[in-house]
Each structure stands twice: as structure tokens, then as C-alpha cells.
Length: 120
Image 1 (cartoon, one colour):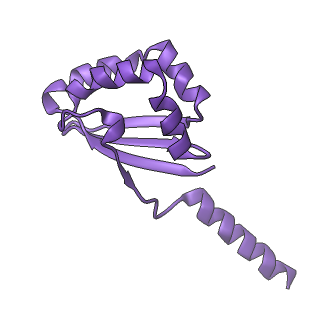
Image 2 (cartoon, rainbow, N blue to C red):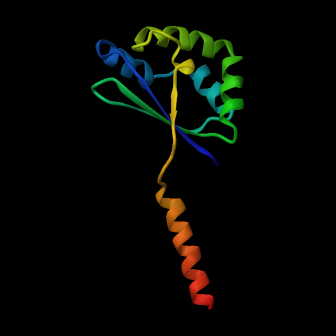
């Protein structure tokens, strides 16, 4: 399944509120994420406000579009916008970053190569 990582910036004066809100995300929001194809979704937050998110999805564009069509996402994003440095809706201001290393992928490659060498 494709993996995606994104970064954003939470206002440093709103870090505690961001953490509090994400400690108990609305059940309707959780179900909407699941139902629109978000898997293994995690968010990390540094003390400097750096937010790093990780998600797996068969089609991130489709998952994002499906979420944007939900009322719960509109309400959630409107509330969260106040916590972000740019003041905009967080789901519209992600910066995707490219994956350059994955341990499992490389171990699988090494294992396949070793099996081929043994077969020779």
C-alpha cells in the first residue's frame, strides 16, 4: 500500500490545544477517515510546532477528495485552522515529502537478491 508523509506547522502558542483535541478526535471524524481509505494514519508534533503526518492509502487524492466531501471534515478543519501558523485549513496546506528510505522494502530486496544468489 502506498505510504505518504506530510508536514505542516502548528502555532507554538496553540500546541497544548492541538494535542488536547487530537487526544480525543470526534468518533464521526475517525469513522470518516477510515471509510474514505485512510490507513495506519499517525501525526507527530514537535515542541517547535513542526507537524509530521504519515498515512497509507490506495489513492491519497481520492481519499482526500472523499474526506473533503464530508460535513464532519469541514467542521473539523474549520476548527483546526485556528491552530495552524498559516491560518488556513490544515487539509489544504500540507506539504507532501518524498520517501527516500524504507527498511522493510530494502530488506525485502536484499532477501530476494540473496535467494537468487543461492539459486545459482
